Image (tube, rainbow, N blue to C red; front, side):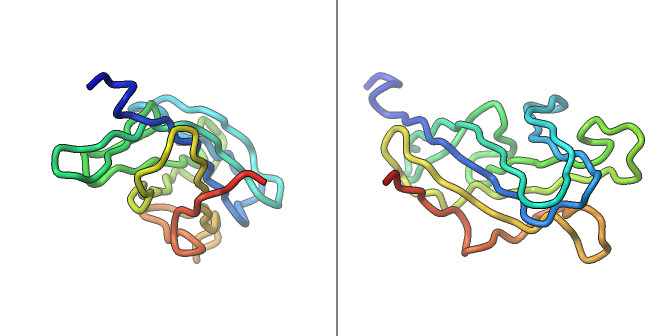
Length: 143
């Protein structure tokens, strides 16, 4: 089978709720590049991107893409903050790790969203593996 027949493109959105005001947040691409950097000013922040979903030989699905990190079976993305998001004068240097597991095999163009709280208990940006709200990735159906 061709790659087109077995892979699908998914549209993912990560929503950061309650980000730390004045701190830059950005989606990490590859090892050290950033996309969609924005400075929090209250409210919500959104990061929209695509991943490729492909079946594996063992009957599960795997995701890949410019923003996807980690080995098969443990894929994730990073939302970088402070100096890690290019904000040189920030006192923060953190990354929030958002797991990509839990996204089911889906048709081409399917949309999923995950939300997390952008402020940690110490008042700084959320970091390390973050707890996704609403139980994880939720499919967004068009009206």
